[in-house]
Every structure is written in C-alpha cells, then in structure tokens.
Amino acid sequence: MMGTMGKHIFIKIGKIPLLLLFLYMFICSLDILSSAFQLAGGRVAGDIFKDNAVFSNPVAGLVVGILVTVLVQSSSTSTSIVVSLVSSGLLDVESAIPIIMGSNIGTSVTNTIVALMQAGEREEFKRAFAGATVHDCFNWLSVLVLLPLEAVTGVMRLASEAVVESFNIVSGEDGPELLKVITEPLTKSIIQLDKNVIIGIATGQEVLRNKSLIKVWCQKRITFQENISFVLSENSTVPTTSLYMNAEKCTHLFVETGLSDLAVGLILLSSSLLVLCTCLLLLVKLLNSLLQGQVAKAIQKIINTDFPFPFGWLSGYLAILVGAGMTFVVQSSSVFTSAITPLIGIGVISIERAYPLTLGSNIGTTTTAILAALASPGDKLAAAFQVALCHFIFNILGILLWYPVPLTRLPIRMARYLGEQDGKISVVCCAIPDSVLPPSAIHCLCPLHGWMASSGGYLCTMCCCPPLHCCCE
Image (cartoon, rainbow, N blue to C red; front, side, top):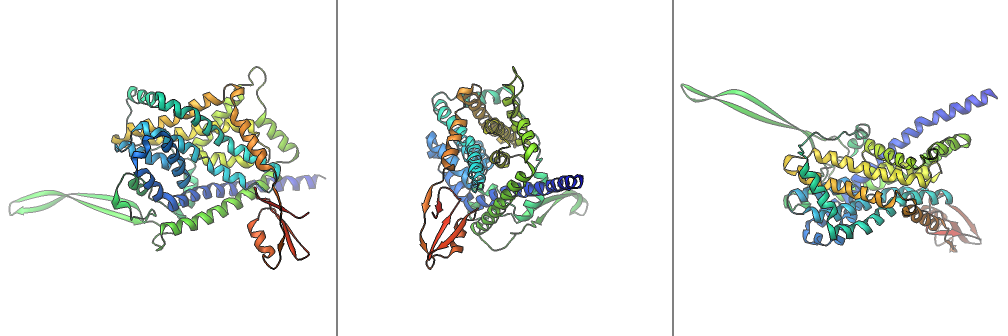
C-alpha cells in the first residue's frame, strides 16, 4: 500500500517539470504568434494608420484600434504606433484615445482562440469560453459607456493632461523585462523583427515601405578613437577623432532566407498555432491528472473562497492586485489571461474569481506601458506618457463602472450566457458517400476528439469543433 502511494506521489511530482516545460513552450508560441501576425499584417496596419483624417471620427478610431491590434496581436505594438503618431504631430491625443480603447478590445482575441482548444469537452469549453469572453464583455461595455462620454466631455484627455503638466517627468531607463529574460533566448533564435518599420510606414516614411520587417543586423557598436594627430603643415598638427561602426548579423532562423515577409509570417503562423494548440492540450491533460480528488478541491477552495465576514468584499480586490502583479511579471495581458483560461475550463478557477483577475491584468498591462513611456526620448516623453495614462484611466474607469457593486457585474452574466450558447451542441447529420470523401479527410477537418463510423457505404462523423457537430444516429 505504501509502495503504491509513494509511486503515485513520485509520478505526480515528475509531471510538474513537464507542466512547466509545456507552459514555457505555450508562452513562447504566443510570442512567435504575435511576430507572425506582424509579419503577415504589419504593413497593412501601418497603412491603416496613414490616413489620419479618418481618426477625427471616434468610432472609426475605435475600429482601427481593434483591427490593427488583431492584425499584429499586440496592444503594445499598436500603442507604440499611436505614441509615435502623437509625438510627431500627425495625431492629437483626442483622436488617439478611441484607438487605445480599440487596442484594449483587440488584445482579448488571443485567449478566446485558446478557449476554442478546449472544444472537445462540452462542460470545459463552456467554462473556458465564458472565462475568455468575460474580458471582451468588460472591454465592450466600458467602450459603450466611456467612448460617448469622452467624445462629449474629454474627461480622459483632460485628466491625463493635468497629470502630465503637474509632474516634472524626466526620461528614465527601460522597464524591467522579467519574463522575457527567460523566453527571449528561444524566441530570438527563431525570429527577430524591426518594429520601427511598421511605425515608419504609419508616420509616412516612404523609404521604409520596401524594407523587410525581419532583422538582419542586430547589434551595432560605435567606437571612438581620439588623439590622432593630423599634419596640416610642417610645423602644426591637429588632434582628430575617428569613428568606427561595427554591426553584427543576427543569428535567427530567417536571416537572409530570400523569403518574403508574408511567406515567413505564414510559416510562423502555422507552426506557432500548432505548437500552441499541442501545448495547450497537453497542459489541460496534465492539469486534469494533477488536480484530481482532494488536491483539486483544496486548490478550488483556496482560490475561490472569499475572506470571512465582514471582509468578504476584499477578496475580489486582492484578486485584482494579483492579476495586475502577475501581468506585470509576464509583461503581457494576453499571456496571463491565456494561461488562466485552461484553469477556468477545468474548474480550478471560477468565472467569479477570473473576472477580477482579468481586470487586474488590464491594469498590469497599462503599468508596463507607463514604464515603457517613461523610457521614451525627451521629445516623445510627454506624448508617450499621456497616451499611456489615457489607457490606464480607461481601465480604472471601467473597473469603477463594472465591479464595485455586485449588480453592475454584467460582464460575468454576459460571458456565462455566451459560454452556455457556444457549449450547446449544434447537431448536423451527415450522410456522405465513402467514395466522395474518405474518412481521413473528415477527420482532418475535425481533429479534436472526433469519432467516425462508416455504415452502408456512408460516412457519419461527430465533430467536437463548435459550431458544427455531426452525428450518426
């Protein structure tokens, strides 16, 4: 009995390094996915920002923010473009605020994609999809209230302007890159991008239009050599300074391959999605095997239980702080919300607890943006800081609208309803002659936990990929 127990514990402990490995690969694949989207759609994103006249309409600015962030899969990239446009005078802060709101919505697409990977189990998918879309619901509800309010009163612009004017802000060092220290050795060995190309296209620098986003030269060292005498005449010499620039070629996989940005982007897109889906499925399987029985119940109780009366209301605010802190550590709201989505799916984290964690994630990603803004050059500092502050104020106002009073927590009810609807199996009976479409072709369309049977010369399948489900009764 004791030997069996020890073996069981040893197997459980042995799974933890595998869990960390899959989590590491999952996070790296999200980074590569973002690079792939930038390669495939970065130039389009830059071109969208070129038409500055469109941004006088707040709704158009909102749509552009959503579209560009979905294209590049990075709110920090779209925010960087906005900062460059504002600091160069091509865009004012008033027009930039709707774009920032749109980027908040666009960045919540990634965890929705992650939730779809749990479509094989109906109950898990319902919970995971609800947990993923609570972020979208919060962002959309906040925009529906705050966009008209900003258009009429300019509250965020005026508040951020007052903060910028009241502080003597000086340029500082870059913010800490905590998680990137671990992930960059792998991701940089695969691909490195020059994001200044997208920003340059957006700001109208035509010379960058034909330049590749893929970095070829990575490190540049400038060397000064002084006190070299240059003879002017027989009796006089002048000290001179020589300057040498040494550049090192990048060593990632796609240096000078001859492939176009679009081709490299599509290669990375397909491979990163494959790795992401594989790691996610393995993560869910491992988590399910680790978090069983009393262990799962204990973790659920710790995470989801509120503080004793009368301090129960503090539990949610503590979760907001945890979400903000964890997002600050991983430097990405997409990574944090995508990482907790499988935990929501398997029931470890309830949607009531996931909601404040997501709100904290929104705050955490804006503090990262503020630190990045403070590292901007002197001529761009004020504009960068004001835009980052607008992003921060937007999320704070959203939390004040949709969290303190339990009755106003509409995003939870909306997300749960969406999860219930998407979890319903839409049944379609398929009768396809075997000679027309072989079973292998059907299985390729529905790879997640599907089953097939052939009867009477006809092929019947059940596909667990919503919204299409096939069955053979």
